[in-house]
Image (cartoon, rainbow, N blue to C red; front, side, top):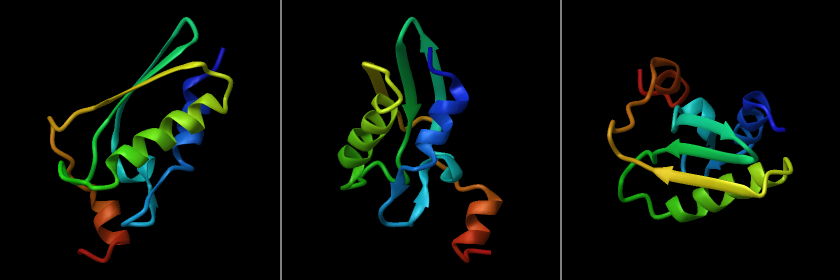
Length: 95
């Protein structure tokens, strides 16, 4: 069975194409639930109108499936809205 740590490592290889930072570092992943061969991921985008959102979801599913997981569910939520951490702001030169 896949572990949460393995899923997190896979998610660290999914990059937001506009910011060139991985979705885990950006804090776009809110929850990971693993049970009976299924991985459910709750995540958001930097903006509700993100034109590349469907591509990000497809990449998340692909990276987690590469771990040997057949059933990957991704729920995109906008509540709470994404707020970049101080570390993300510093990396992006916003502070």
